[in-house]
Length: 393
Image 1 (tube, helix red, strand yellow):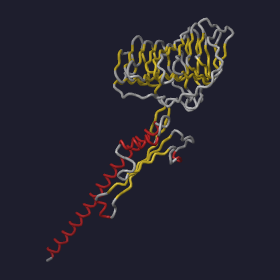
Image 2: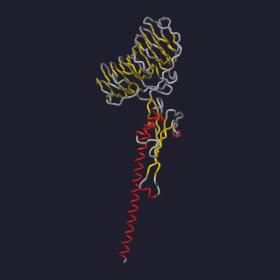
Image 3: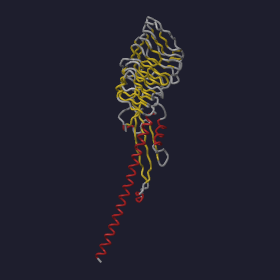
Image 4: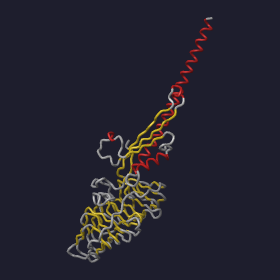
């Protein structure tokens, strides 16, 4: 009788142990699934925050975040998913900086079903993940946007602190190109490039696509063609027909700070004229072009603050996107500080002395003279006009 009693007790203990083991295994399965879902939610939140921050300058941050989260299989309002983008971040206390205008926060949340935990009355669990991205200075400084042509290097180009992006072919002929990084969509011709370019990258969109063309005001008095040995001082405004400096001009031409709208023309400089301008921005409408082909000194520095709504500080030349007329910046002694933005046109850039920063964005780019490209944007309110989103939380 005692043996039977002991056998029965053992059977009860085994059954109880199996029940406990089943519960532990079930709980482990549920917890493993929830951890897996948490990782997926975090990945979606990270990606959505970057997508949202990337659109702060160019579009709808909320739509971008929601679309990106959907592409990661978490669509707002579907299968118990809630995607909540916020700008500025909802949890502002998590940041020590007082300026949150360049931050986007995204929370992705889902009601996840349980399996074995239902035995204990727990049918679902709320899982969430939060990420914050910041729109900061991009490391890029040279962009060839066109699908054909690309960048042609016939000199020494030094851009040690920023990146070069080529949406077509990088052709290195009689010179070398040195940069922090070099990315090429199609191919590399020639070999003098440091570091070795990464070939086969995805096409990069226009990094300054968010710029808004300024309004065209009434024409100011235009002294073109300028030919004054005593010197000429120009004030900001709309110059109908552009600004033309005659080949025989011997007096200096000075641009006072501000925005110069070149309507129906551009800037043309021949001969030995010397040009200076500190805190200036030039907008070239369709029909005009920039031709700095003289042998004189040209020293131009972009506005540090926004010269007009839709144009931030740091933009020196802004040629209308509907204008495909080529630009030539090849003066004798060229000192340019600012963004050279010719998105639909070929740009030929001659040699130049070192300045704090230069950003080159054009359809195609020809480097015909030795140039040092700096990347110190500390003088610009808001930093570099070219932005990139980075994850900060």
